[in-house]
Amino acid sequence: MEITMRIDLMPAVTPALSSLMEDASGVSGDGSGLPAQLNSARAHLRSLREKLANSAAEVASLKAQLEGITKSKSWRVTAPLRRLTEGVRNKH
Image (cartoon, rainbow, N blue to C red):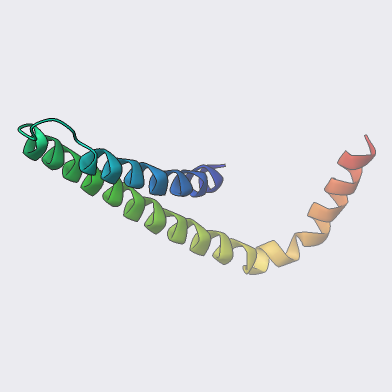
């Protein structure tokens, strides 16, 4: 389900951000390439933060939609029918 996939992506972003910061701080040599690498890492970090914010907003929106559905009158009225069909499916 889309909600689960978005939620599953969020924990993966934090290690990626940490990895970028380590990569930027662990540059060896004379440091001549450091500004370019740092700018690249910062751009990538901004991109990941934007993706995280978009994912969080989408998760919040989907949760609100799901809550709206589950609290609707039609959802409550059809609850017995859903339980009945689940029981029939589990028997077969």
